[in-house]
Length: 141
Image: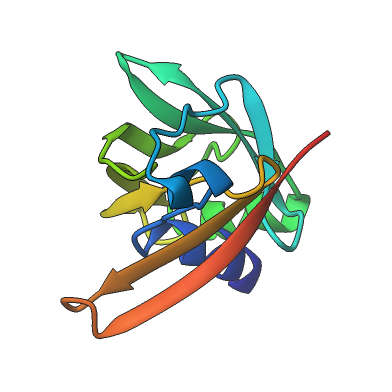
């Protein structure tokens, strides 16, 4: 359960911003549609795409441990689950929406931004910004 919590929970429970060099210039950042991303422990891969007019991230692959952890948390089918939902442009290269944490079957507010084209720095907060955590996802090549 720790694998999914540490890899998926951190990136989804918390607001998830991901930065890009374009984001720092103040220019709008185009989301890398149809791109694959992996969490730091390489236990979960997602595909960013358009879903219902917004940006979303759907699990395309998960390690056996991540799958088992999600099942223990009540998510029977991890692969195919949308972890990032209804992400809309939020200015300065950010995208805001919802993040689903399969280990605990909860959805939270989240944001994403892209960095250097191949990195996503995820950061999120709960309890009115008192508890925050960050995680860097990498593009799968």
